[in-house]
Structures are given as C-alpha cells and as structure tokens.
Length: 160
Image (cartoon, rainbow, N blue to C red):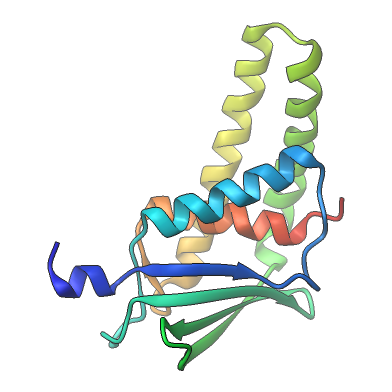
C-alpha cells in the first residue's frame, strides 16, 4: 500500500459519551464491533487534503451529527455537521426491525430470523447509501466505511 493510500484512512474513532443513548448489550456490542472494524479497515479522506491518517470524534449537537476530523496528532482538520432529518424514516424502521430481530433470535425459527435479518441489512445499506450521499464532497469514503459509520450513527441515536 502506498503512502497516500495509507494516509487516506481513520486510525481512531471516538464517540461523545454525553451524546450516546445507551442501548442494550446487543446494541453496545454492535457499536464496539463497528468501531473496531472501522479502524481496522476503512477508506476515509478529506477532499483536497493529504494530511491523514485521521482521527474522528462523533457526537450529536442539536439533533445533528458532528463529525470532528483531526490529524492523528490531534490537529483540527474540519468539523462537518450532518442533519439527522433525512435519516428519520430509515432510523425509525431500522430500530423497529432490530427490536424484532433481537426478540426473534430468542424464539423464532432460523428461517424467520434470516428473513428479519435480511430486512435489517437492507435498511442498514439504505442508511449507508444515504450517509455516503450526504457526505459527498465533504468526506471521501468507500461503501463499507459508510456502512460502519451508519452503524455508529445508529449507536448515537439509540435512546436505550
């Protein structure tokens, strides 16, 4: 991997404790996995800049997501504010399907669980596509990175 490719990535991701709605154990586990997976494998850059790799701090401010991007040394690069309004329907549907999924894994048949999980993954992909669209021109990332960022967005939005 070339130096430029290695610089267009995240080396750390943190969530603002004051913004996080604590979820159940399954939700917390999913958040930790998303952060781990995101840091392990991602494509993340700021158009016109080559000062990565980057650190990302995510919080919610006035019902908007704040993406505070810094160099790995902590120097401020940019803070992007993303409205949650376009995500309301997807988040509502996603949380409803997640509740069904977590209930189903305790009592449903494998076929029922798989059907619910397919719906959950579809909504998750819809959210990732919407996030990538909203970040276009502000943050360069691949689909898997957008998908993991959407997981973190859901973690910030959970009310427990």
